[in-house]
Image (cartoon, rainbow, N blue to C red; front, side):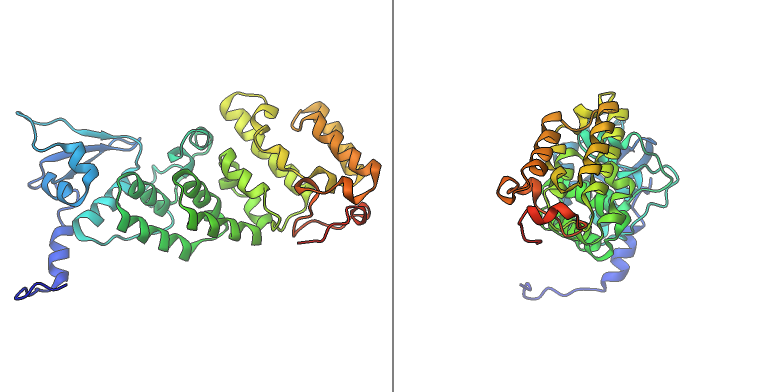
Length: 320
């Protein structure tokens, strides 16, 4: 609602003037040390405090006596932090998929728990800038910036971006983004399983995928992908492959494999344990009984990409 008598000048010169103050030492009264690269960033307390409750609490009502020390924010990459400042100063932000910083890391390094540890295995010359900004927006309680980032992610979603976007959605409970990512992976399953982002997924994120009937991938390929995922986790966390895989392998539908495939899997499982023996026994039981009613349930339900095998007629289940 317009205030009576309130008139506006041109917005562009005002925005340009404020943008010139982003990371400008001139008149700045707060200094940040940001990211693993420990980049120095300059800002203005009053502007940050009036625009964002997070910074209001972080900076306090007024600086103490003497020259204040820097505020260290080590978990947010410098480029993402500068994008947040740009938004706070100008109410606009330039988003792009990849960072232009040579010091960027994969998004997994900004994840939480499992995903954070996995991210340490991967280093790259670019990270997914918009997801870093989205993460910062959620952490700092900037709802408008969060929505701008979500709109941008959905617009540019592709195979290279989707698994990392799914991880952010799961980590921060962003339901609509989670649904869009899962639907995209269901439609492009083979390609998504080959990305680095897939290997960086946390167990809860991978579980969401393995529970889907709509993945366009055969179960044999899904078992291979799960093994690769578990090997990465085992290397990063210094834990056995089977222990890393335990939260997710129950969702593999082994009864869909042909007897020869199941025998080969069983032999490989002896050399490198991945799947509990009793789970393989259950799959063999389905083959031995050759009865559909013994195979009812999610573990024998065919996925959209399941290749036909002779024994599937005994499952007596419709293809979804």
